[in-house]
Image 1 (spheres, rainbow, N blue to C red):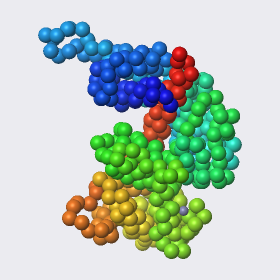
Image 2 (tube, rainbow, N blue to C red; image 1 turned 180 degrees about the horizontal axis):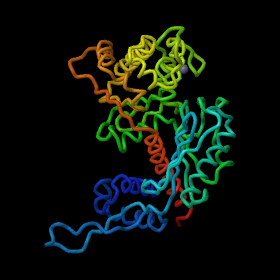
Image 3 (cartoon, rainbow, N blue to C red; image 1 turned 45 degrees about the vertical axis):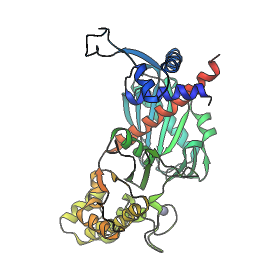
Image 4 (spheres, rainbow, N blue to C red; image 1 turned 90 degrees about the vertical axis):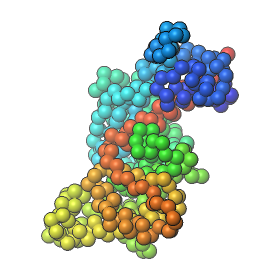
Length: 395
Ligand SMILES: [Zn+2]
């Protein structure tokens, strides 16, 4: 990207994170000259990405009484789709360029695991259907952001492994380009939740924090010095597949003894079928309820999960020394993992220093937040593409 585009993108990002901001304030925030900002905003405006809006009149009316002119993203300029791929469905959220929700819907999946080509077709259908419900067409969408569990190099749209895809090492770039009418971006779903926590959630104002996601699998998003840490190969953190037991339980990744094979939904269900012989639970809340009613089998399943989880989290603290750890998931899936007992276990396994433990905060955000994280990532990526397009148009 040339210098002019770098400036345009920084200005666009500043406007996006501020909501609405004056040219003078952009210049101050970016530590650049007002003339540079004026040029960049004129370019962004003629590209249709931002627009002027009237701010409040200056409070000190001794000066000019005219309302200040502020700049904001032009919400009507783009439609972004954020997708969360769950086991049985795709959650789709359509937003405008400012992130305001246009429509959300659920697209049911026949199969939790599918070939890569089918996966792309299903994504297309899911977005198309949601557009239809919003009186839009697929061609109105500027970008599709896809949150997927697994080892993913987001920069290359390359999926090393995912529980939703039957093949390994899939280069999705050509497949997405051939199968969809607009750019698409695949990112690890835990990274998207970390992004959402940073932008809208419990991570606001924190520079170093971790987000552990619990649902079908166990994910981890790492924010270090305010930035998402993806690692050298781009696959980020596979907390779910860190080993907590030598030759332990079989994991869906094919290896043994992974944390996920003890604490995720599928692991609890699998264990419960063995431990609660007289009844087969239908869900994790079912197990929880039986445990509350005194079922010894159900209790032992949850206790083992909690023990393993506590060990995993204390390893995270020993490695990263974060300000806080957010445990994100549905209440029935994370309640037992954030109990006082687990906190005690973590405390006893963490290297002792004369400072308080990082806070461990459960956060039941629901599927919506995954999709919200996806839309935030989509807006960011579409902004980059639109600015890059400007380069070829510029004189
Ligand atoms: Zn594993």
